[in-house]
Image (cartoon, rainbow, N blue to C red):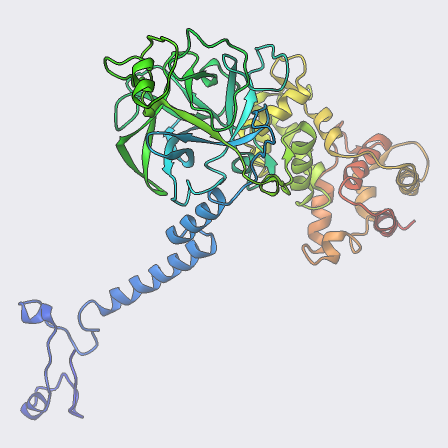
Length: 519
């Protein structure tokens, strides 16, 4: 820093002014850098100050959005490590629909998923690992360490009991599938495996990869429970019990599920073990020899036993109260998705339904009231409504019942906009009668502009828009059926039917339309 102690100007050539200055230099200057005039802020102070301000603003922005790494980790941990209810079984028999933990004998760890770690960029495929007992994920039933025993829809089951030899699927805990934006329950992820390919192998061992996958149920998601080294001798059909030592065989590849302490891996939740499909058999020993060494007498069974890496068990709750479930889920039904879409449309104001209808008509360059799948999705996105693939498919399936890939947007809008009741329809008819003085059904836009009063419009009262802005919006939303400058009674009724969809209270609607048309 340069400190000027002289009262004379710094630029003076007077010797006294030079000798009366006390000079201090920056490290850059001492190393041979350039000198600075008295008006220059020495060093990079100005740039550093600007950079600090930019960094502070970026920090505050990311903090407000919850994008700070520490905040993200905290939200993630609260989300997936929260304790969830799991099934209590009085008789120990496992049933379809039970929520269980899946433990491994070799690692004393519990199978867990990580929905924040995608293994395939183009699909909903997430990593799986085994969380050691005593860790945050393995110490109890959490959202990431519990699974739901689910039926394979293509198999005919005699009852709801899980039995040896039956195919079944293991779904993730539903807590992991609540969409943060809509609150709807997305379709589950399933424990899956596929034959080894160049990009589908376990990263630590190069064995057959195991993941959690989304999408329609696939044969690669099915498993079979079998007793240890007894597939040739155990009669199929007996119930699977909690804490039974079992081998879980992947149906499509016939490879058993495994976890191995020799393959530790670092995850977002600490040190865990890799889960893959690979068979581990006792070398040169039969099941009989192993059990005799443990002091157990058995009949002469010559099949070699799977090692602890392949041995698993289902863990249920110790106490009935651990199964109490107070959670509430809203399934991703067409009604549920449409409700969310309607809420988003109406949040744009009372003209919301009208505005998106106008947008659809602009996209409909064929003029037949039909949009294909891509056009319909684009229209929603352009209006600010982004749907997940599952949500969009749910809506399309509801309106495209013949499967031809197109949708009638008028039918869609009718489902979004509830029709006005009789009281509101009578008010709409009276308002049009005030406009159509001679009763010929030919009200011009000029007539509408002259009579319409925007002062009582909801957006004006809420101070969201001025009267002129509301009038401009109002006039832009007409001529939807025939662009002839004439507002027919059906057009007028359709307009206020759309407006009615965004107003819950009859009295409020009556006041609004009465003030607008001087009823």
